[in-house]
Picture 1 (tube, rainbow, N blue to C red):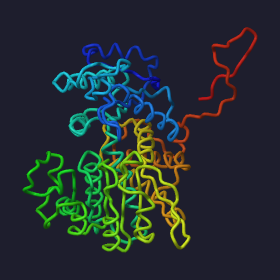
Picture 2 (picture 1 turned 135 degrees about the vertical axis):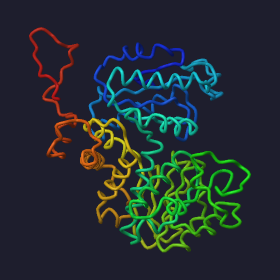
Picture 3 (picture 1 turned 30 degrees about the vertical axis):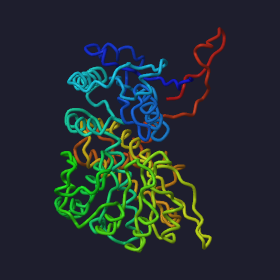
Picture 4 (picture 1 turned 180 degrees about the vertical axis):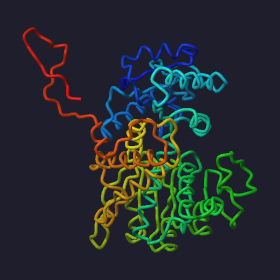
Length: 457
């Protein structure tokens, strides 16, 4: 079987005690951004072990493509502590450790050593993005490291920002502040909790108390509604959204009918659970129902754009995590669904963080990013059904986001790179990697008598 080959740094639990020397093998010495995974929860695919390396490679490609961060300043890392994927453990060509995932203290010690080695080698302001760790590790690592390192978790914070941006964009259509929404989540994992907590922050910014904001948010997982007294336990991260029972709820449709949400957000990755009845119920409860089917890949989206639009007579405000094509309604009108892709958020935020010398990344940075993204949606794009700018504009979207976030970081005293640039827009754009070459002739062909110009910085 042919495997995709990715260039990145693999660190095994067998390397414990020697991670700094492993980093020394990476040829670039001026690294500014690291994306790391342990391959346990590759979105939509599950535990891929070392084959999860494609995720940090892909994310860093987007750093460069979307935000112009120089590729040689980026380091993709895959931590190999084994895999619980039975197929891989039986595969004679599997490239990782043939063992079940190590979930002992050794695992935590390995991540600690990795974090310390990165900042020791590349500096305290090196950005470290966690990607596709299991739910049980994602939150605790974010909580553990966020005040000690320049780090964020894209599955929690990036997803939260892009979802909130879509919700903020709907204000221009429904004409109501975010504090008047009731949001019902399908799923209660790291994505749902990240979005919910950022929505709470946005509501608090508009004057609502934290307790009242949390009451506006409900979650429904594979065991049912998160409510007090249910038989299945909830973890500490979910407790803020466990409410008294609103009535008898046995299904997600029951939850919609009882809670009467203005918005439903799907992040369960369990397929078409926004059924026709659910969508119709949302259409009956709301003049402009908000339906976000954010699970990836497309086969695991909670519903299709066509179902969402057609079953609400084109009235719903729809966004998805996977791409869907334009939908033509019975009256001939065409609606273009927006794709709530994290690529709208993390490259611009990363560029701003790197250029500002930030030591720690606050959740308020992602709130600012969400507001900035929502503001970049034009009235014309909104009238087409979009809740996000076209992906064809992603480079300019990312640069404008970086400018706004840089302004915010300096205004709030979070930036440590001085002197502070007076013209933030010019500063950001001057640092973007230029892919226009005067000429290109690789050094391997450095023939006698042939001259060539250096690559443009």
